Length: 494
Image (cartoon, rainbow, N blue to C red; front, side, top):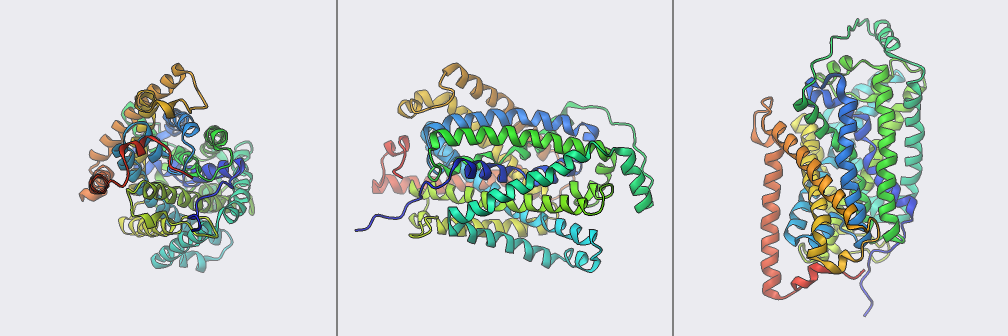
C-alpha cells in the first residue's frame, strides 16, 4: 500500500517570515489605528501611546510562541502547544475560538479592501466606477472572489503561495515607506490648508480631552489586534524547513520588524493629519490612512499608497487561510474532527478539505460584516479569542515542565527557567489586564441593541459549541479506544 500523502517541508525562512508579516500588516496598520476613534471615541491624541502599550503583551505572547514552537514543530500551533503542554480540552476550545475569530476576520478584511479600490478610482476621476464599488452586492461579490481566489492559491501548494506572498511583502514595505517619508515633508498645517482648498472645509483642532486610564486601556486592547498574526508562523510547523530554528526566529523578526514599521507609519500619519479630523471622519464613514493622506500627497503618490494599502490587505488573506486550515488539519490528526478534514492532496501536498471549510467560514464573515454594518464586531471577536489564546500560551510556558517533561526538554530557545518564568508571568499579567479591560468595554457598551452585537457573548457561545464538540469526540475516542491519553503528550508523526 502507498503511504498517505503528508504535508512537506518546503517553506524556507523567508517564506515563513512572509507568512507572519502578511498576517500582521494590512487592516492592522491602514485601518485600525484610525478607525479606533469610532470604537473608543474619547482616545483623542493618545492613539500612538496606546499603540506602544499594546505592543507589550504582544511581545510576551510572541516570546511564549517562540519558546513552545522550538519544542513542538508541527502544524497546529496554539492547539498543539496547549494540548501537549497544559490540557487537551483547553487546547481545543481556545484554538477553536481562535479559528472562529480568524475565519471571521478573513471575511472582514476581504470586505474592507473594496473601499481602497474605490479610493483609487476616485483619485483618477473615475467617479462612476467609484460609485459602482459602493453598491453593496458588488462589494460583497468582490470580497467573496478574493477569498475563493486565495483558497485556490493555497490549494495549489507552497510554491504558488510563496511566489505571490514574498513579492507582495516587498511591495508593501516599499509603498508603506512613502507614508513614513511623507512625515518629513508635510505637517498638519499642510493638511488643513489642503482640505480648505479642495473641500472648502475649515477644521479647527479642539483642546485634547483629559487623559483617562480606562479609555487608554480600552484603546490599547483594540489596538492589540494590530499585533495579532505572528501566530500564523506557528501553523507552518509541519512545512517549515529546519523548524526548531526558523519558527522562533521568524516569530521574533516578524514582531520586532513589523512593530517598528507600525510606529513609524502611524506616527507619520498623525504628524500630518490632526487627530480631531481623524476622529470626526471615523464617526461617519470607514476611513483609511491612504484615503486621508491623499489630500496632501502629490498626484501619483497618493494612488501608490492606496495601492500599497490594498495589497497589504489582500496579502492578509492567503496567510490567514493557511493558518486556520492548519488548525483544522491538526484537530483532524488528533481525531477531534472527522478524518477527511486532514485529507492531503496527493500531488499538491495541501489540506484541501480544511482550506475549503476555511473559505466557507470566511465567506460568512463577509456577510456578517455587511449585515452588521460595523466590521469592528469581527475584530472584537478576534481580539477576545486571541487574548485568551495568548494567555494560555503563557500559562503553558509556566506549566509544561511539570505536565510534559519530555517535550519541555525539547525547548531550544530561552532554555533558562528564569527567562521562561519572566516571559510566562509577564504575559499572564498583561494579557489578563487587557482581557479584563476588553471584556468590560464590550459588556458595558450601550450603543448596540441586540446581545449578538456584543463580542463577549458571541465568543462564549463559540466556546460552548467547542466544549460540546470536544466532549462528544472525547467520549467517542474513549469508547472506541482510538487513541490513548498518552497520545496528547507526544507529537504526531509527520
